[in-house]
Length: 315
Image (cartoon, rainbow, N blue to C red; front, side, top):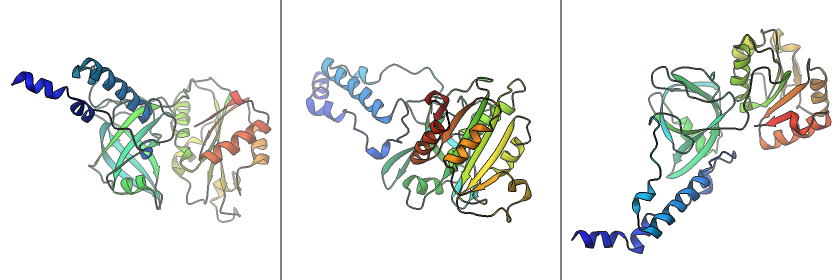
């Protein structure tokens, strides 16, 4: 009987049932992370083909992981419990996730994670950058904007404290080192502010880091500016300046006095970028984060303003 069972397990039909399923396009977050969900699929497919050829199912498991099951992993989704959900604007949330004990997430400032959600039996994945300090203990926070027709937005809007969400990572090719640049020119649109927050905080938390920072946040209205209190606190440091560009407002009269001199109206374009670059106190290195269109436009403007391609980074 045992011999018959083993023979049944090695039939072509039995092996085909073990073949990895190719991911759907919705399962790719589109952020260029490595390994991508398709990289993991091709890895598992190669593992399956080798196991089938040698008729050795133990090869399907791959090497055993020595890491703690609650530790962040770029290849495997790990469950984290939601401890708080705060609505910052009508469509944007700050969500806090608990970490075991006083552990840290283990990201470099500006790195991102991949969130997995399931809506209407469809698996979707999106990239988000934690806004909590890189050395935060016992928690991490993310900033998430929800869209009316977005599938992931439906999933996020259903979250409540005590729920569980699944993340993998970290990902990201920008690694900040203290005093690496004379000045960082941060150009962010909307939730593109997210990777700037932990980088900025890592600078102001480090007394030995004398990097100048000019942060420009692009938003539709004054009310839609995220993390106002945090940004005001950061602007009090000797080496930090903050500016805002509001696309759907045209007058400073209704703004608080502390914002009137540092707010422009319209869109962040060529002329303003040239002005920002020229008024930097040291040679700037630019960090840019927004939509694909925003990043492309800003990169072009930076080149026209005299920066070289190795003098900016697009998140």
